[in-house]
Image (cartoon, rainbow, N blue to C red; front, side, top):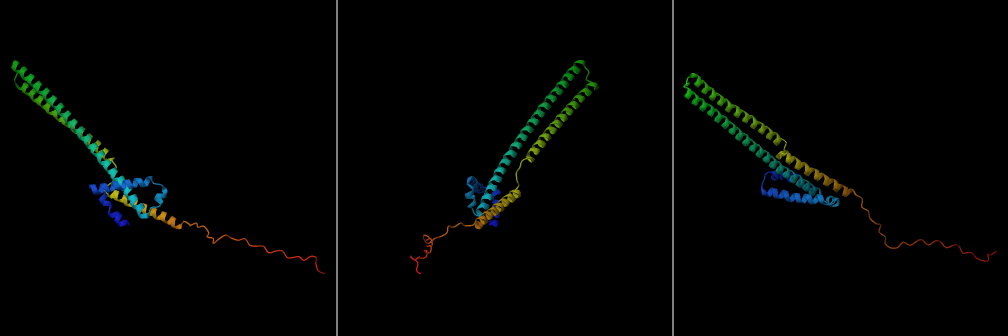
Length: 224
């Protein structure tokens, strides 16, 4: 019994509509078995209980795997949106800084042209403005990188907390459930075998009560 059941374990997690449909049908049977009375469960054979345990465990693991995938997808989408927002904010901040720096240089050129002071001091101020602009750009980029690293760390922490059994763990759980169900069935069968059978005594007909011996006959008058 066990080798065929264990051989069917990879098919449950290999994917495909047929495996999913089989698992869903087994889950319906498992739910019906759970709602049944103890008398019905006691009437199952060891093989049937093993198959029921395997089906129930497989459906539970399949549902858990689907839920884990949905959670992981949601976390990744949230992290992606957060990174996009950080990048957009950094781009806007850098653009504003560059525009402000260009405006300052333009005003400096106008002032220097009007005053005729286009010498070394003017060139030094322009170079300093360009240096400040580059430093601002580096600072914005660094802050954005730190923010995105924090987003990735939080997303990885959330992903690590999702419980999604691997194929090996799922196979071991299914196999263990099958063995437990089979052993439970054997125990129930042994109890049924060892239970005493109560039978009513068989009688061939009505019982007759014994007839008492008649009293001795007394002669009267007594003879001499």
